[in-house]
Structure formats: structure tokens, C-alpha cells
Image (cartoon, rainbow, N blue to C red; front, side):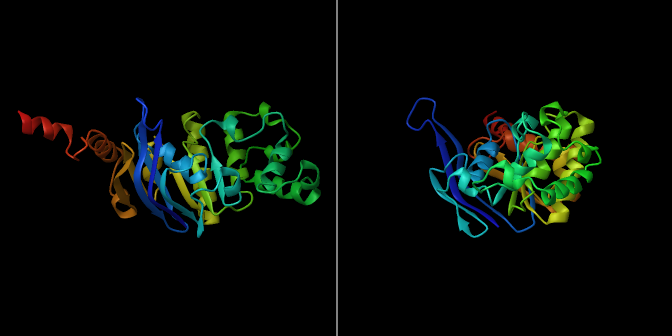
Length: 269
């Protein structure tokens, strides 16, 4: 479903602050697979997500989504194939529009049409039905402005909007990080239910190791722009958060030659 082949992205090339954010990364995501990406700040995970979304174009390599070569395809041209939820609940919705108007925009994703033709009785009925699944009472607040809702309510709406037109791939970019722990758990439960029921191919970036263990079919750990570790479902089910944290720190502390710094220090002593 998603093929990332030897993709590289360099920022500020040939300047003193040149940064290779993603370095010849190859990753394949099967249809219906839920892949979670973790890594420290600057590891390249968010840049990789942006490359898949088309927010950035790669300097080299190839990106294929659902059989379509998207390597040089701009973000708006991928909109029909992708649903995306960002870290900030404010980014996924238009605060000045009502709940139903936001869904009308989602229903028009990838098309050139206004809100008027999209908002009809059939669409409103579908919006109410989907909102009722949240059990937040939002199905009775279609005319409420989204800016008046809580962060958790807005993020829940954003997830429903992201999958409204049944995208081929769902991108979740630390989508629970800005929420309090209780709301975060609720949004993750909603996420798992929607992904499972829809059979969505999903890529999720997170810093929450508990969410990673509970959710991933496969976990990808990035460091310094490369894929440093991959763990499958069977390996993950045997791990605790403590186990994963220890592996994370070992991976993040590796030198460029692949040896942990602790081993390098021992060799030089």
C-alpha cells in the first residue's frame, strides 16, 4: 500500500546548517497494517510523515501510495488518497465554521466545490450518525462553531473528518500529544476502533510508548534519519513499556558506526 524506497531529504543543502533529516530510508507498509514510528527529536520521523503526505518532496528516492507514484506529486494532489491528523487539534478543523461545515469540507476533499452543494439532508444525516459514535453529544451540535469545542472534541471530529471519504492511508502525527492523559486514552481507543473497522492502512508517529505497544502491528524506531530498529507484532506483544524504553535509549545512543556509546567508551578505556 505504501512503498518508501531509498528516500532522502536534506534541508539547507551546501550550507553550514545542512541537515540530512531522512537518509536513504526504505519502508513498506502492507494494506491494513498499522505501523507506529517512534524516535527522539530530530530523528526524522515527522519529516518522513511529511514526505508521505507531500508537504515536502524528497531529494532522491521514490514514494508509491496505493500503486501510484507520488514522489513528485504535491500535497493537494494526494488529498483523495490520504487522511491526516496533526498533533494540534486546532490544525485539523476550521474554528470559525460549524461542525457540519467542517464535515462538508471533508466531504469535498480533493474536489473543487463550495459548502452549499455539499450540505444537504443526506450528508447531515451521515454526519449525525458518525458523530453519535463518539458518545460526546456532538450529533446534536451540528450548527455549533468548532472553535467553541474542547481540544478532545475537536481532535475526535478531526479523526472522523480524516476518514470521511475512506482514504487509502491514514497518517497520525502525534495526534494525542496535546491532550490530557484521560482524553488521550479516549482518542486512542477511538483511533483503534476506526482503523480496525475500516481496515485502514495507518502510519502513526508518537512519543507515547504505551500507545505504541498497544496499537502497532509493526514498530519502526528512527535515529539520525535512518530506520534503526523494526519490531513485529510477536516481538512487541512480549515487551513491556520498560523493555521498549530501554531499547529506545540503546538505539538513540548509538554512534554512526552502529556501536552504542557505552561500548565505544569501554573499548577506548
